[in-house]
Length: 582
Image (cartoon, rainbow, N blue to C red; front, side, top):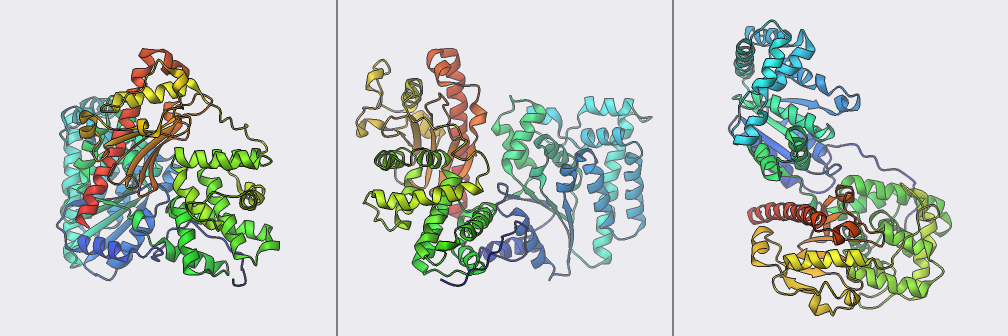
């Protein structure tokens, strides 16, 4: 162990490659330099996965090529101050500022000012004239002007709808002419426009901006790189055009605008290097075997999202300062890290341990049961290793006490209620939850069926009766998922996975004693990491009692849950495509 220096970890994007993904950065930069235009690339990923850093690193590579002209635009400042309605104008003005002084640029700037004279009218024109409109969603064709919005905009101005349409057409031609002139005079080949933080906008506003951008996306010499979360766009389409526009139509919208989807390679992040550097900043050093163990703790709990890892190490730095009396013990640090990972990712289990710490025998059995029933199992195995316990050996009371001693300490970095103020966890059986998950199992399984009339038998089923292949219909719909399993013990959860490789792709959800059917969200898991989570708030209208007792309520619950599982399967199929190409 080294001498600790207490530092914090910032969440700022960086041009420094912290995760050894240079082959992705260089590959994307090379593609941008060599591809034809017009083209639009989407850098896809959840918040905190490093989209902005990837854009900055790609831009940094492109700076070495004088034939590449670049423009950066960030939407975050507009969403911060609720200025989304000014976003389109600001983007267009920045596009104009990137162009060389010329007659073509002046003509383009004058056209912009025409729309900007009356901002309310201009905003409606931009939305309507550039919009794919509701007709696209219905017909799956792009480039349709929304006639209703055009008429409304025209009523507020002195121009006819045809005049407005002509102005928009001319604006595109003027932009193309100005871009061509700029690149020619500078002996450059491309104008690369980076647009960041689209997913920080309200989903409907993000869709509006993309619709407006369509006018410029088709311009020769222009290449757009957009940082965006795919789910934000799907939700934006639903918000704007109605919930009846399903995920497939959201996908059609996305695919029509984006020619090259690039997913943040979060599963390929070299997290060991990040961990080593983080510990070095804290003045600590561990053996590589211990680094691997810390890596496994992180991957089976919070995952490899850089923002989550920065948060973990900030909390760890603070906790080691508070717990300074034990700072020279490597195993103490390991236990504290395990406790923080448990705290951030398995809050219900963490709180149950804290609330019942005087009954260690009960807690030891509780941990075993939870490890069998949920995705907690992988983390539990690693957590035991961090406490010096072999894979196939259960914790002792003394080893559990080491963990419990850190619980009170780690509660100081809680983002919500601490165990002392939180609602007491209730882990008793809920018969309605048991009934609903077994009915869901029956509806998807090929042959194995539970007797729903024999509620006294719930929770007593043999392990081999809790697993079955999906029916052929659902194997086709949910490919690559092919197997369904009722969780062990009381059996209040469902796991749908790929039989030949259950750790590679799986979907998991479970209910609780209070009648919540999706207690901790519906989780999509790839290689033991949560890659997508549907919040339990999405299912708040369903209670176990109402779903179990009312057929008219069960069917909407079944369809919504199946739709969420299908979305996970769609994501998994995309991962299969990416893996097959690499």
